[in-house]
Amino acid sequence: MKRFALALLLLPAIGMAAAPLELGLTIKDHQFSPAELKVPAGRKVRLVVSNLDSTPEEFESHQLNREKVIAGNAKSAIYLGPLTPGRYAFIGEFHENTARGVIVVE
Amino acid sequence: MFGSALIVFRETLEAALLIGIIAAATRGLSRRTLWLAVGIGAGLAGSLVVAGLTETIAQMAEGTGQELFNATVLGVAVLMLGWHNIWMATHGREMAAHARSVGNAVKSGEREMSALAILIALAVLREGSETALFLYGIAAGDGTASGVSMLSGGLLGLLAGIVAGWVLYAGLTRIPLRHFFTVTSGLILFLAAGLAGQMARLLIQSDLIRPLASPLWDSSPLLPMDSALGNLLHLLAGYEARPSGMQVLFYGLTFLVILLGMRFSRARTLQPN
Image (cartoon, rainbow over the protein chains, first blue to last red):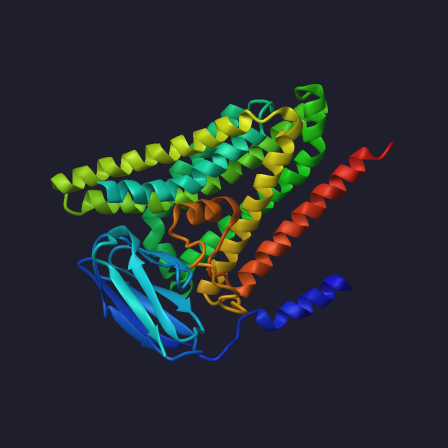
């Protein structure tokens, strides 16, 4: 019975929500473009990262609590948020010196 | 060179620490070293396969195949760690009492080791495939002097990761037997809960489950994730500076279920027949 109640409690947490806002981010020559993305607060975002370099990159942000390897010449999606207003920095971990960007939520 | 050493070190560390803890926790089990080697070998071979398939995996499930794959790997790892701890709650004490495994314990110890070999293979597979990708990127990239320097940096990082795992192992084996199982079980309990939290993050990142409150708290000013201590605590105990509510829920439930399993299994063996 308790287990059943717990399952019910978790039910609304699974899947289904309003369509997320889709944003594109490109990696070329180990740099992000655009380096600054504007996102409205409280909205879920589907970030589609296209890596135009032939080498892999790891999208990483401690502030966004996200981490994902994007293979060379490949495209991948990362879901973010909903986020509260602020600046969220992200880096490409494999080329930390050049691959830097920020998501501005307002 | 230093940069690539650091990246490979970070990728290697998680698997190395896990292997260090498991190797220590299974001291005295029959043919342990062989099983550990099998696990590491299978994991390395698997890493190359997964690294080669990265693009294919990534394109699956509308670009979130990588998360689903890694979440599955983590889920299996959590189950195996949990099972190990519950198994150890009864047999560990037995083994400590007899100083080595005898009779039935040898058989079930063998089964236990084969399951742990799978666990180690999965840990190596997950971190190893990312390391292989990174090193492949360097090798395929410039191919010049800087490429060679970065590649040797990568190997240095790999070596440093292995040393860290070995240091943890050596440290753990110095703990007196009386406290030994408590310490290793405790470490594995936190490790399993941490992996469950990471699994939740991947499922959130691929939009399969909701984050609930996100973040539930923010302790990054106190203990940032990119500090040495924050990173170590993240690897060993699943520390997150900005966790979502769902991650904390996964963490807490896993912790509780394994702990109760250990208590229950211990209580059963302590009952007189």
